[in-house]
Length: 111
Ligand SMILES: [Zn+2]
Image 1 (tube, rainbow, N blue to C red):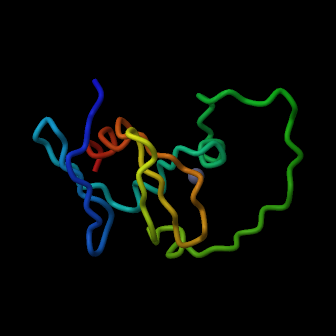
Image 2 (image 1 turned 90 degrees about the horizontal axis):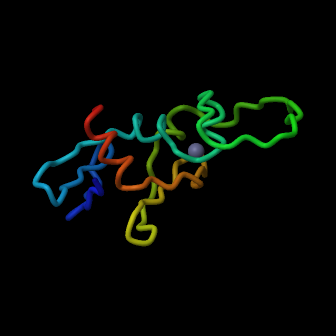
């Protein structure tokens, strides 16, 4: 199935409301959106190994936590990526996650 949104609204306080072509509506909070960010580095942090891993072992750098949780959960901007996905920029500057509509549809069922 390929879910198609008819309308995507920013909620005033928290997250997105998406109306789907099949008549259902998803309300997805920012915390869930950020936690499920589909970019490679967030997947790696979550221990999600479903994406292909480079063969070389990464050197472990010093982890510096630069941003507060509030910043990480501050959804600043969303935009369409082609006909299939949304891009999002967060308060800490993170914007590499591309959220396919199929993922948003699944997240809508979780929240
Ligand atoms: Zn990410």
